[in-house]
Length: 526
Image (tube, rainbow, N blue to C red):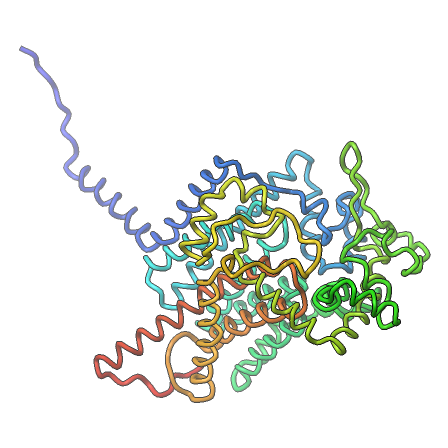
């Protein structure tokens, strides 16, 4: 006979354990949506890594928007002060990262881009929830967005596109927070994010920024407009200071000195080569009209006079120092030589715009053709895209509406005339979404602002979504051709949010009609 002794448990032990578990779950339950996105995001990146996709630091070293890495590491602030080919914030971000020990640099940037991606997913989720989307639907949409090859491939490509998309999402969320309670700190955060966009990507122009500063001030003109103006003061002064410095130092009236080359690409290079030759022979165009965009310096010999050296490496050197053995020299588009090249192209572009407007319209049509292709089709993503080609093809067909099963090009076309693709490569569901967002957004804003009717999210939020989608869509396609599907990445989360808001507003209005309830004729715009 075996005797066993059992120590009795305290009477309240089981109850306490259950209460602890219940309390823990009660804390997690309100956040299950965000936690789901985090889990899906992390697991998906493990799978993507297992598929062979690796973080590409190439743009940090050979991107034409990026200064020589030695200059950024060893003489950061002088180099940034003499940057004119791009706004300064992205190069400043790279330069600060390069101050780390060599073994930490790539992991630091990879971690930063991982954080941008997670921030995009969580930011889109929070924006959708604040627009009235249910938790389950918001989780599904946010997860679907970060699982898109047209999104996550940019997370593995060290370019400014992913940080810009993150800043765009955060700016919407900051504006939503501001319209909740009209706190000055939320306004300051919103203006700071807009200023960061202007100082990172030339597409987000000073005019766009100032319009939104004025809009918020006028919106609160009868209450606390002075607090709004004070919240905007520091970002406005920084952005204006950078622009004034660039104008004083380089005579640049735009945020990038490559504007002339970009404009020539959508005008001059839309003409057949024979016609350009004839116009050059007649003296209508300069010899630059026969030289492709972003060509090496030797192509312009005799067309651009040599400048005396300034003593600043990032302005004087036409090539970045080699980083490899055997040496590979990369063109330094921040040299003053290329600022002069851009000025050479600009009058040619304006002349073609006046005398051959059909060429410009053809360029705009091509730009829209490129804009509505999958963002994953961008040629520099070819190596990573190949690792997930099956998922890319499935996603493009099922979610984006791409009918053609072929693969995208792995190299940049030689000229703008070659950018056209057949309709089967167009993301037709994306086209529909943009038409709904732009057309439906205009209708709803007209009813809310002019007609003083309707209901839904604050007018400021709807207006920001609508105007920013329109700005990205039309400005990027009216002034540049070739990389337009890459630019659409910035507007895609806004389009998802605005379409969701329009659908919810429509469903609520239909529900109100079906139940016979009267919707308020006017909702305060706050």
